Image 1 (cartoon, rainbow, N blue to C red):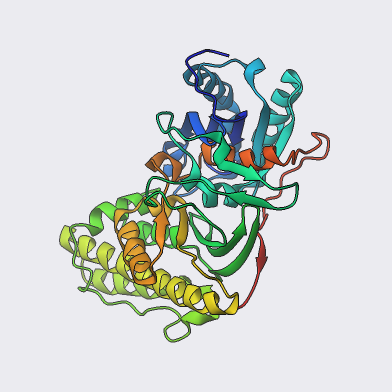
Image 2 (cartoon, rainbow, N blue to C red):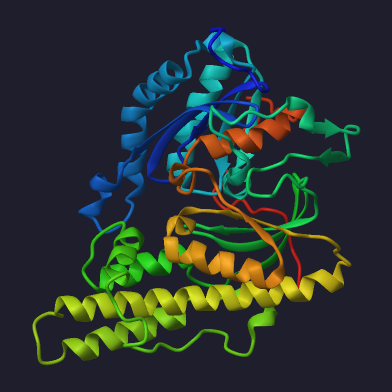
Length: 389
């Protein structure tokens, strides 16, 4: 082990090939030593979306290169590892398989235990990952026994107050929109989820309707900054039914499509200001719906589960990279007297292996390893159990 590394926990090499990013990371405890992400967005842009076979080929082509860079920047060698972890789902089956086979081979070559990680749990726990220069004693993580744990990690945003459970968490990615109750690390209950399109998916589709390309959500954000969000009012989904525990984006997407087509009647294309205003209007309504459902569901959950002193909201997923979304989350948390916890860098919002390493760390502490002969991809893997509040 290179002496320059301040080891804060087990050294875990993690692999994520769940969709169209090839990523390998090295973490020490919750400290990110390296996090290499190779995006395939340029490959899939010409198709307007992810093509599974192309994704598999790109993963196979780049994964060795990504591994070498991850080890180089972490300043370690394979023999320094304590474990190997990999995303098993949810995601594209054909893409997941590349990472799983790769991780199995690495674990076998270095005779290290293998850890299977839920991609959604990775997003959920991504705010716990820390940069190399963030120091905290490993003694902050105390496990009472094999079944029950106490967790007294002090994030820099919490005014040195211990992070306690239960807490709440949201995952807003391209394919998932979830609000969960975090009873403790590894035990989750779904409080609200989408019944059709995910929030990130709907942003991408609305951007495509405006001709903004792929991936569209990030481009939509840029255009929305120059627009008037009140110029083109859209119907709020689930209005008056926010406490039913569902997000829904198919209706707003249909209304938006009709609005764009109506504006195109009699003209060849929209002018720039129209596109700015449409982008702002869609983003505003999409985020407003999410906040309304989330706030009402959290408020209804607190008395039902007799939750006291719950003041933390974990925020993970690619949509949370949007500055306006984070602003709205902070406003909501202020109303609820919560403290939001965001990843320390934008690189941890999208699909990446460092968040898989963070989730794997807690599994490692419990010796929650998997037999390489039994590991398999689970494209529709869920997180926790769904409940109604």
